[in-house]
Amino acid sequence: MMKKTFFILLFLISSCGYQPIYINKSPEIYQFKKIVFDGDNYINNKIINILSIKENNEVDNKNILYISSSYNSEEISKNSKGQVELYKSTINVNLQIKDINNQVIQKRNFAKEFTYNNKQNKFDLVQYQSSIKDDLINKIVSDTIIFLNSK
Image (cartoon, rainbow, N blue to C red; front, side, top):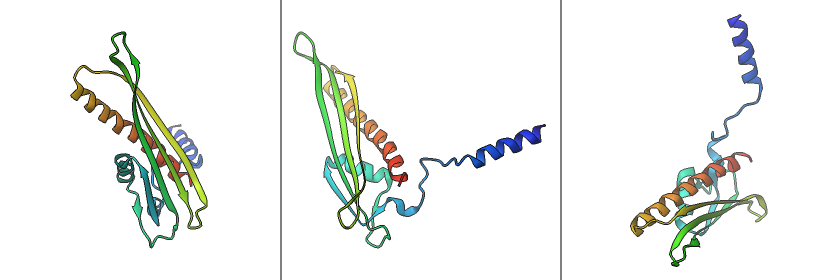
């Protein structure tokens, strides 16, 4: 009985077409002929470094990657004294993959935001905003992995 259950389970798992999303399909998938940045350099560099995206003129893939990003932290609520109570941080990243003829092959806009309370100590607030920015970038990187692996 145990042997039969094992073979049925093995058959179901192996024949369902399961493939991990976060696994890199080939080493060339994150290599582009050229990478063009626009916007927030910190966000762009962090995405490139985490994903290990490389610029390689000799790659068979002659596509160009365009990354445009922006970061915004804004006050969204004040109390009766005019002091800020709530902030909202937003990151927008626009990725485009174009061929050598400048035709768009794939494009996607990623947007993440987070709302948080003000802190009394401004140093703590700046540190907290920095960690929020990194967390939002990591969420966008997760979505980017899925986007790049879906080609």
